Amino acid sequence: MPSAQDLEAFSQILKTQGLAGGLAFLNEGVPHRYTAIFRFAGLILKNVCLHDAQGQRLPPFLSAMPLNKSLAQFIRPGIPFRTDDSSRDTRFAGHAYEDMMISYHGTALVLADGRLWGTLCHFDFSPMPLRDEAFELLEAVAPVVASFAVDPHG
Image (cartoon, rainbow, N blue to C red; front, side):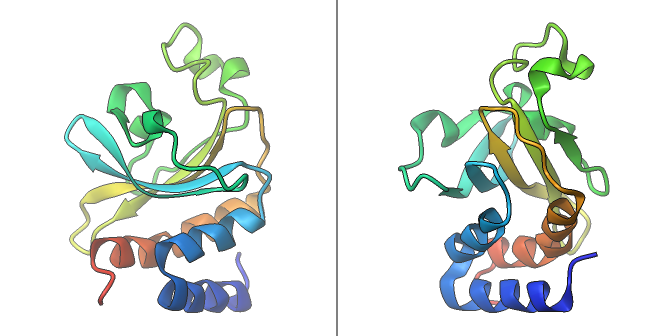
């Protein structure tokens, strides 16, 4: 369970620095290169905000992608998705995305009415384990992120 201090720190950063600051905060505690918010737009997954630990610009192929080419397609409200290494994960043998996104740890962003809006995730193109505590923090802040991403002015 995330500490009250971590949750309060995240909330304050989100209020003062927006989504970019919130994602940077979450990324500090993980080995993954990227921490991001994506929203579902029909059969397309669109990037809303992305933090790259290497400080690079958003790669064009991460701006929008077919949902069926993303591991985000497996996320549902209350059903997160995690894989440290999709290339060794038997759930993906023979799938087109098997070697695209190697490490993916994501959780649902759900609207107040219960609809799935998007995902909050850590990912990398190399195998990357994620501590349970770091994933629990991701899940704990997801409702706040969902509200803020949809309406940053409250």
